Image (cartoon, rainbow, N blue to C red; front, side):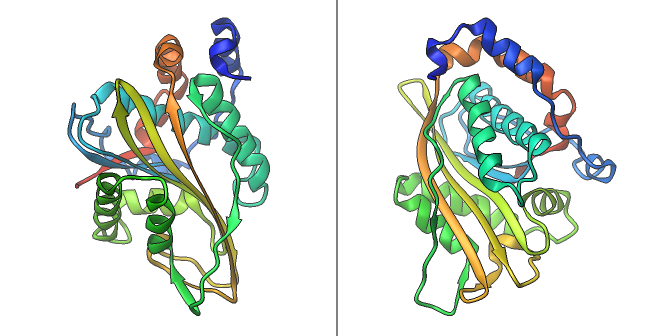
Length: 254
């Protein structure tokens, strides 16, 4: 059901009943400061098992809305389902949470990534999939975010956070999104991905996967945030996340 047709009291009750996954103790020590959110500047962020980019022009409030709502959906889905073993159920619940807080979103549809080559790099797949629905400006910011992440050392907290939350040694489930604003409405182009492989995964986004040893699945869609709905639950989402919004979100230098 479109959340716009639902009673806000029902939405608030839904949020109140959500259970969220807790961060491992060591993870809480990796991100030293709250993410930096600046009005109208472009930006790139690690957000649990997602990476989110913003083109120039979004307010700090709207950036926070995107990061908080997608984090809420991930942590709630993580609590209900193993994101690597129960991927379909995980995405169903992830979508349910996003829909309840105001995102207008369709069911996630995945297809297997096929390539003629013997190997493929995840960052190249991400850009290719998003390019089908995103603008050149969108892709430029996504590329900057990926490059900023790539420049970090393996022990950087942001790298550890994304790697720990997006995949295990041989399976993974992650999202890459880019956000803009159109007539005051936040629009996100989101790529959704999951995989299994016989290889050992390390730096996921730049790993060369063997085509014959890996099953890599992709999906992409454009979604928008209903400001009228989200404005009524914004503070509740913030309160629900508490310190998790700091633990699971970190900005990148782009």
